[in-house]
Length: 83
Image (cartoon, rainbow, N blue to C red):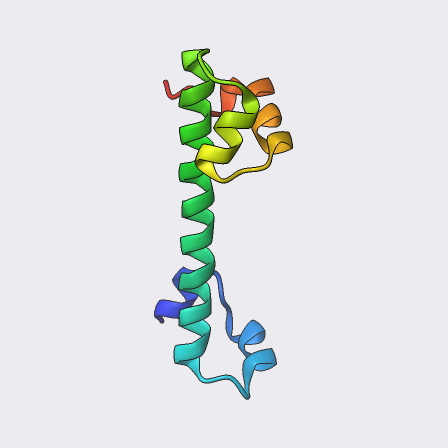
């Protein structure tokens, strides 16, 4: 069953009895898009931080993140180092 591959079991489905399955899949895809979009913004912020040319404020505005998020990204470059 396809739904089992994305982490939904038959027990979890009982809470969605009144929701059409297409709507559930749409919601899952929408959540996935949000997560991917945020990851792309984080990676872009990390690349801009590495350039060491721009202030955190400029980076935050350009990638649509908060200044606090950009500062947090700058503290953890290991999350973005791909070996």
